[in-house]
Image (cartoon, rainbow, N blue to C red; front, side, top):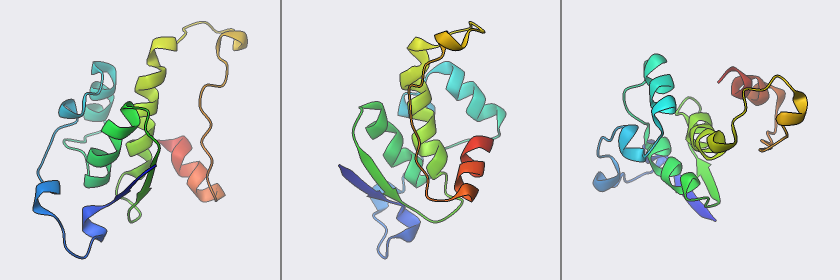
Length: 116
């Protein structure tokens, strides 16, 4: 398990971790890059820049960051990418089995994740 913490939440930010990077540099597929751009996001937040590559490597990650820092996208984008090879256009429920389970501690967080 890898523990990552938002740079803004750290008492002494490490300058090497605050370097700007693009979503493309994180290795996201074109469909996700387009969706991120369509939502108006230009670059990942620090928690996203740390989490996305680890999740794409199928590593276990526990992240800590303040509300509004993009934690949901930090796990959702790489999960969507990992699931994309099994995508199905079929309307049949049999062709859409459960492939990921997201557990949250509150209904409010569930609503936020669903909106994402």
